[in-house]
Image (cartoon, rainbow, N blue to C red):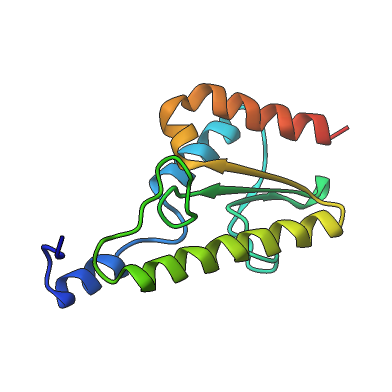
Length: 138
């Protein structure tokens, strides 16, 4: 199926997609903040710029988009320029593995949450993140 947008329109559309300060990321940070969890967002000095980090407890949290990070359930490859998108998503997944391994080797606690988990059951997912953080603060 051909793309319904012209190449220029598609380019403009893709450039408008944010990599940080997404609505979902802001919603998660606010929910955690209201529960008394103090954190930083998108710290450039940390490898992979985690969406949420708590340096004091060596915790990093990544909120992975189903499309960009190749979710097995909801990720899909666009029909136009399929080879490009397959390679792009694979590079993203490989980078995620490298970043996760980096933190594990440095004895940090890594939590990855899928976009669909937050959209399906936000409160339970936030509870899981909060539990993860509190168990590692000890």
